Image (cartoon, rainbow, N blue to C red; front, side, top):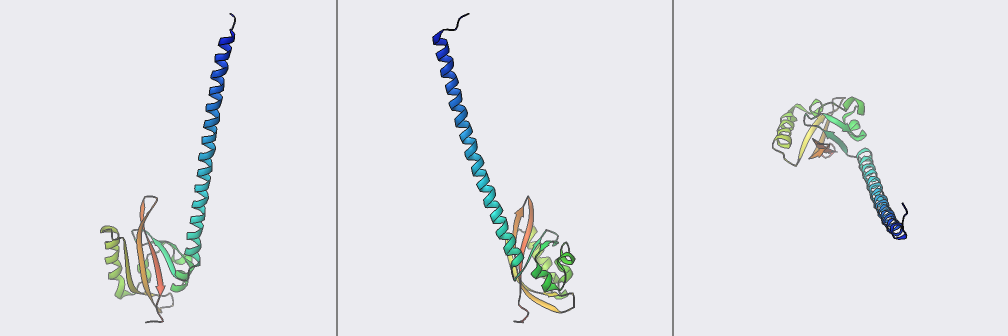
Length: 162
């Protein structure tokens, strides 16, 4: 069976259209990949900014879970308490709280997680490893990370003012 010139022209036109569609799809894929790479780069930069602020700050930082366990702390907080980061990480803040302030932490724990208070500030007294008192202004906000509700806390040492 012979292929006519008309049949070849039609097939050629179809192939050209398919090639143009493939080129367009390829270009869209390249653009999406470029956008994704830009987004990933921006995310890495954002994570690096947060990490730098968290680690280099002269204010104590901690991330706590709903059980008040400090899942991450910075060196400033460890120094403030007189322990190493390893000694403090995964312990609860109540271990370092002056007995007169434990009830406040329980009240705030209830408000933060059960009543979903978005943030709180309080003045509290903590006890260092050497037994000395450290007065702090404590600022905590509630946030969600990977589906888990967490607390982010800044602890500013105000001992000298006290």
